[in-house]
Structure formats: C-alpha cells, structure tokens
Image (tube, rainbow, N blue to C red; front, top):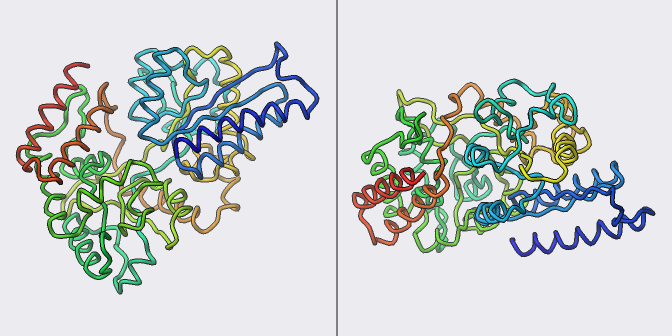
Length: 429
C-alpha cells in the first residue's frame, strides 16, 4: 500500500506538470503556488482525495497540489520525521488523538485568523468547530463525523446459517457468537472476530462502559491494573475458545484496511470505525454491514462517542498559509469536492455539504450515514484529549496483547507490564 501510494504521488506530480503545460502556463512561474497534502487511509480514500486535488487545480490555475498518502501505521512516524526536518506537507490530515500533541509542540498553525476570510465555518455546528480546538484556538477542521463500529461480513454469517449480530449484544454475547461462528464456518484459519485486544479504540469503549476513561483530564491513565487485566483476559479467553484469531493469524493485520483479517478473508467481524465501511467494502467480496461495539451489559454506561473522523490542519511552517487555508476550505465546503469525497471520511461536518451529497449516496454510504444518526442518542461526550505519548502507549497495548497471545506473558503479568510501561511513557512527557 505504501509503495503504491508513493508511486501514485510521483505520477500525480508528473501529471500536474503535464496538465500545466497543456493548459498553456509554465509551472516554473514565480507566482505559482505549490501545495502538498498528506493523509493516511485506504486506496479508496487516496483515489477520492486525488480527484479533489485535481479538481482544485482545475478551478485555481497556477496552483499545484501534490498528494502524499500512507497507511495509518507508517503515517505517524513519517509525519514526525517530516516535522522534525521542517519539511511537513502544507495540509496535514490530523487525528483527534494527536492534534493536541502537534499543536502544543508548535507543529500546527492556528486557523482563527483565516476564519471568515479564506476559511468559512458558518455551516459547521459549534461542536464540530470545537472538536478541532486546542487551548481555545482552532488547529484542525473536521473532515467528517463518525463513531466506532463493528463491521461484519453479512454474507459469510448468513452462509454459516447464523443471524447477524444486533447492536445491543454484550461483550460476552459477541464472544459466544464469535465462537459459534468459527465452528459453523469450518474454514482453516478463519475466525468469528479478529483479536481486538490490541485495538485501543475498543479498549476505550470497554473502559468507558465501566465508568473509566482511557486518560483523565490531568493526562494520566484513567483506569487501573484490574481493568486492563480484565481486558486482556477477555481476549485471551476468546482466543483459547477459538472465537478470535490466533496470535499467528492476527500478526498479519498491520493496522490498515488492506491487511485487516476481514479483508484477508480470515475473520467475519472486526472492530473499526463507521467511516471505514466504504473502504472495507471496496476490498471485500461479501456484503458488509455495521453494528455498534458490544455493550457493557445491563447498567453499563455508554462507551462510544461521536468524533471527528479526521481533521485537516495546516503546517505551522507552510510558506503559503493563506493558500493552504483556501485549499482546506475547498475540502470542507465545496459541494463538488463534497460529492467526490462522499462519506468515506465520515458524514461531512458542513450542513450544506451534507445536504448536497444526500441524494447522491449509494446504499452503502447511506447505511453509514444512517448508522451515525442511529448511534447519536446512544453515545456519551467526547473524552478528555489524549496526552503526549498516547501514540506510543497504543503500541505498548498492541505489543503486550501480542505477547499474551504467543504465551510469552500471562494475563496478570501482561497487565502489570502494560501499566508500568504506559506510566513510564507518560512520565517522560
């Protein structure tokens, strides 16, 4: 995925030069503006984003937009390297998890001076605007609204003679269902669900259902060793019952849609985000559908929340801040761009764009938009912002869960190790 995207970038840059020459102007003119856009995501997202970049060039002669794309796992190390080398892209796709860290380190530009000028936010709700604020200033603009979602292969489940999962099933019930599904399909190295123990968004939902938080307002862990121990035990038990993927099979999943066990045909259910349904379906033969994450059972609190699926930010050292803000505005407000992007990044935050694309949505995209509407009264407020180092803790979670899966750690020792390493990361700041 990575190499193909970089190849696409090179081709796109070459194509921009050819298009410029064909249009009768030279890309070497001093007044030309060159912008780079960097995002993570699937091939489906890359194709849609490339089209919007090309559309912007058509409507704005003299502006060249080069797209760069990587998968989630490779994206953040590359962004960190580019930022350290003072060579980040002008527009940076940003995640709620990282925006506080990048903004407070001076990596992002405050967008408030552009609002009402190059950047219009009058079609955004206050909550949508606030979702991109850090310490009272706007550092990111929401590209869409989504929530966590369990994506399942409806075709495979029904072919196994089972009914599809319902939105109010508990973790125990989904686990039992996954075990039954694995047995019913009778396929080698095929499981009811992937191993979600290493998936931080799932852990966060699990914790919030218990009244805990992943991180508290002070930037500390919002849970204890017993909580993470219960989480690891849930997945260790399911692994041993055959309901979720073995550690060997789970190792194939690299954090991207392309390598997801659902895409690879090795599981019927995965814990993901609602906007990813479009990308998953593009790579899957079976008909896919959405359900909520498992519930915490009777009396549990809501675990899910609505969040900006991604934000778009401007690099603090961009040489063309006004041009970058104008391109950002195009991404979130232009109706033609909105129709091109669809709901792949979530339901558009702009009311005008949302209304414009509704008649154009296919069945799949409409089901995703309907899901966001369905969960809207079943979610809780946004959690406190992740502290600096949260990204590294995500890797610790994956590592410890994997060691438990390979029987290199007991659940109890894994819980102790996770807490020690996570606290160490936070202490370093």
